[in-house]
Amino acid sequence: MMVVDVRKLNNGIGPARPVYQHGHFCVRAFHRLISYPSYTLFLLFIIYLLIMDIILYFKIRSRKLLDFNLSDTILNQKIIHTIDIFDLLSIKKIMIEPIIHYVRSPLAESLETKLYFTYYFPFISANVISYFHCFLSLISIKFISNESLFRRQIGVIIFQFRTFLDCFDGVIYRAHTNDKRFKSYYGNFGYYVDAISDIIGGICLIIGCLLYFFKQRSFHTKLSIRTHSNKYSNSSVSNEGNNETDLIILNIDDDDIEAQTYSHIHSSSKTTNMSSNLFETKQTIFITLVLFSLRYSLSAIFWNRNVHAYEDLLDSQVDLSQQKSLQLSILHSPLTILIFYLWRYLCALSIQDYLSFAIFIDRTWEFIQKTSTIYWCTLLLTIFLTELHINQIRSLFTVLATK
Image (cartoon, rainbow, N blue to C red; front, side, top):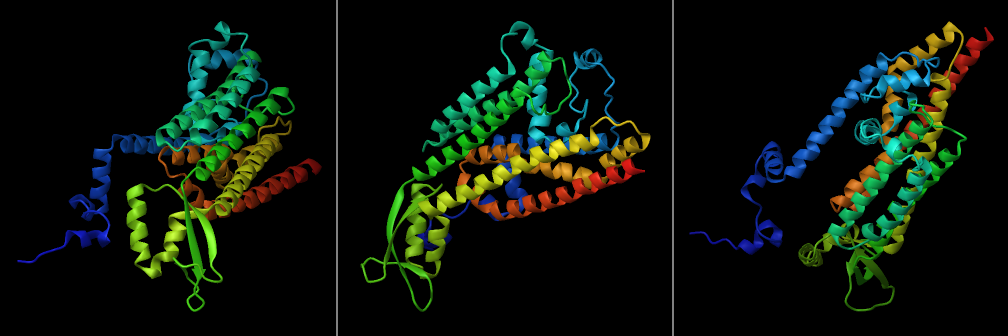
């Protein structure tokens, strides 16, 4: 008879894995979907977004030029009873975030077309709604920075409601002005109010994450450098050259801390992984959040700039038939559609949803840290590609105008 010490199973950390975890990936995935219905709903939601994006591709390829001679009265009569997600497919609607395009915007338009919101509440303007969701952004900081996961999830729900109102204020503005075209009204006072409220919303979300990280339990340790191996090791005796460091424990449970710390202390080759995976200094956290804020800001600035540029080039009214044909050929080209899709998933509003989801499932630090490199590379490449594309389109229109 063979005797096995169960304490040595799974590297001495906790019990052995359940039987289903030893099976094929598909078996484990199926078990997850059956055991956790929320995973199934999330998967169905992702499939819905992908299917709608495929439909959008064919809608873009078949889209005609916008009819600027169509009166606002006809536009209102055309969509007063039905809401078509792909109706009046403007440049901004093509480049907007998928969740806004397929979920929030139809819901916001339903409040107006089905429940007649502006008819019963004519005194509520778009700017009033913008002021209110700024207030909700400030409230969400209190919840998102809380150490309780349940309260952070409440903060995410509050922030998502704020994002819905950010979409709803555009619907209210278009209803008051009798203009159903989905576009940016540059130079309007409401445009600047909406822009400032979006900036406040993003700042509040990032500040909430920063405060939450700083509230985590600190771990005071003394680290010394091995001159021969260039590795950090824990030192219980204070010697010359030792550096005392305050590390913060991020997103890990008490049992995992004790088990993994015990394992790393007895394995000198993994001590560096303990510091990098479980603990971070306040300086590292602050710098990481600053870099995240920078890519968030770049996404917002260049998305807004590029939407404005493409609207002027492809959605503007032109007189010559050659210019109209050029607009359609550029709009239907695969390169243009690729750029539009890249910005749909790289824009600041998409980043807000990614970060909100990470907060909701308690994986905030992992999302910010592990997506940094790939997001920076993708964002900078998209910015460079978009600038080249816009300059090429402008040169084509210039050459056509000189003929």
